[in-house]
Amino acid sequence: MKPIRKWLAAALTGILVASLGLVSTGPAQGLSYGLKAAVKYTAVHLTWTSQGAGKTYQVQYATSSSFKSSSTIEVATNSTYVNQLAGKKTYYFRVRTKGTTSWSPKVSKKTSYPKTYNGTAVEKATSISTDNVSGSAIDLTWATPSGQYACFRIKVSPTPTSGQPAVQCTTATTLTGLKKATTYSINLYTVAPASGGWPDINITSATSTIRRTTSSYPLGGAGDVTLVLPQRTSQATLTWTAPTNPSPAATDSYRILLGTNSAMKNPTWYKAITQDTTITMTGLAPDRIYYARVVVVDTATLTQRSDRSGYLLVKTITLHGALNGSVSTSAPKKDVVAVAYNSAGEVAAQSDIDSDGSYSLVVRPFNTGTTPETYKVRITYIGSDNYASSWVSTKASPAVNSSQAASFSVGNEAATGLPATRIVGANVVSGTVVDAKTGKPVAGAIVSLLNVDGARETIASAYSGGSFRYKGIPNGHYILRASYVGSSTYKAISTQVTVTADGSFTIKLPRK
Image (cartoon, rainbow, N blue to C red):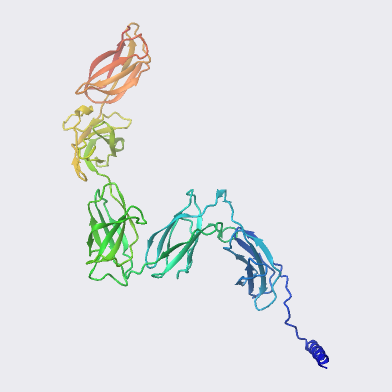
């Protein structure tokens, strides 16, 4: 009787369900949804048929076809991107309307890491460095092996209170929203930037994890660290603002940490401390780059009590001095320049002439070691009119050549005043070179005008086509010399001339 009773009970239950129009909640029957998937590197784009307005959908995905250890997301549209998947893996996806038990048939896609992106080899970040770790932030820098431009995703665990950092298309960022005395794990991924509707997509796996613990100092770092100009040869003045909430105690002071890089590897402490928010550091090396950070310390014990400030780049300048002078002339100032020559006759500095006729040449005080360097300065006319250049001298008359110029030296970060120089209108010296026998012009002769008021120096020289013309020649005594190079036809000849106005001369080349 018992088997008959069981059969009757089942039959009656079926009749009752059918008569009441109830639906069985037995095994779910998959609805098609028209689920489609497209893959791009480590992101998959899913689309499916809408099930009506206002519907919410659940998307499930896993690396197992049975959806073991799956992840589920909810969306309010009939499409979504599943991003930041692992590369070189097959993922399975399915979808259903929220509140139902029936999943769509699954679809699958295999992810990948490309070897190239936009024609460039894909590279992971390298040389990851934390330049500064405070109680609430970490300064992060990195590079790529070839130095190529790329974009990067930074993953921080645990997640900062400010959220995960945005994708960075640089090689430096500051992680903020961190908690004191907390260890953070940091990874970087190279990404393809968002385009064509696709989000930023990882195109490499993660870098090796770096772990950093934020500080637990009672004070935050000083702010607004600034270099007070002008920069100096062997000193630098810094200012900053005090930490707040809380502020330093009356028993606290400030100390300066100096390094050769922003990461402050093997840094040194500046010798002095201060309770002011400014300090002048002396005894620095000239022409040197320093990275400076400000730290609050206990005055008595020098125990660090604050995070480091942000770094400030401090560049000391080279040993230098200034040669200052003035020029008077009716020529346009834009056509006049001052040029300093060192004791070796090399150009050491050059300066335009200001509208008031003044100029300043920045030069080094020493040539080697502590041996003073000396300079001669020439005021040079470079225009197209007829004005005479002149060396700066202590004499009233123009100095035609360097032997008539005065020599000047200068102290470090000091200035030496030079005598005023006058640039005046000059003369034109022209003429022809002829054969002494025939009187015909000689093409190919070299004609030189040499000054003889002092050491003999060439003032002008040209390859003559039978005639010559020199502008900007001051009054004075000169030698006109003509020679014919590369031939045994003519002898060289020199003629002394006095120039007080424009003059034309005929040089007769004698035959050998």
